[in-house]
Length: 525
Image: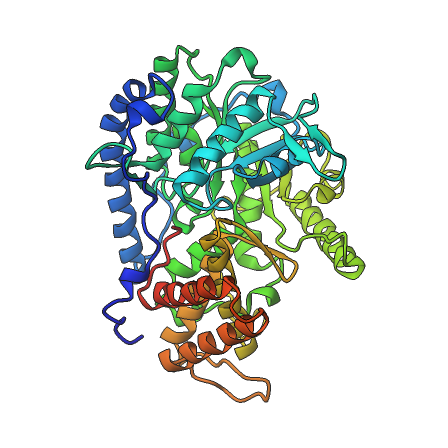
């Protein structure tokens, strides 16, 4: 790649910052400042140390020293186990959606799904007003009081009584938050968890507090989360081990340390989830300099591709060995109540995908649309497969099988990636952390896949063949990619009425998206 333009980093998305004049004593719940300050003092410096270690691991991988397993330890050879609470044994489907959308949260909670994950992270725009709204909605949802106006029926709709287990996904250790304490940045993870739990009344909860941990990159990071939960339990007056969590396996280094991660969080954790789209992005990022690792067009990658399938089988093997749940990933193709053909295809793909996960001995999966719940649940044995193990399952499978020969590599695929990142970033600029585009639910994870994919094709343009519609190889130079951005932006603008306000944000989205690729900004922020 050529050197990035001097102003490319100036276009990168800014850190989430509280508005000018914000005062933590005045503008957040009474007493929260005193509750949070000691948490910040202990956990933000620690978070920053862990973030620095992540960069070192990435740099080593890009230099050829790729992630690998840790030496044997008590975590891998001991007889320890996790005691799974009875109230969470059935998680055959977990519905997920952005916390700042009250209507969607209520619909997910009323879907009949065994689990719901209210999201403060990837599917919610990382902006101050969305964060605060999301936390308020999460608190109300957990207290059972969240409602929305149903305009079709002309009435307020609330949460039905159910046994649904409700999780809240906080932002990960890679994210910092500005503007909360004067002159300081803080750990977004610590802030989100503290602000949520501080406002929760345990007497109003139907089960212990449950969080979802995203974007972990090492077993060492589990110590941070375990200590944070213990500190909050003490400060909040909660019993030891009251805070429970699930964690996403969505980074390539963590795939090699999942048993150690479980061990280090064993007092709190109840399961692991394969966050497949972020995992694909991370896998490509950590192998960015390897020409054997250039991704094919995303929608030509089969759901059972080896780099997913090997990890998809390892996670249940380790989780079930230790008594924890193993949950599969999100199916991106969404059903449609307006398009019967798309709807049929989406639900057929969903059933195939979830049956594959069940055959890998997963205990459940993720979905994001209420119409998916019944089909997803039906693919998994009730209540779980905790006692199931595959005879002779390898403990150390190949977690980095090359995608070479999988799918296709075309200019049309690159063009689709360009179009998607522009439209996704346009959604973010308009306050949406996830957008339904061409039948696929695209969030930060899939945006990241596309940005890395484009960068790979640029970096390895002299060794990897990408063909156009005529079968002619096309080198993905900076100039060529800029031309694709121009052309796709023009198509999007031409589809709008003259003077439409969306044109300005589309143009800004185009500039930001290309700048992120050119500047090598592939971390999940």
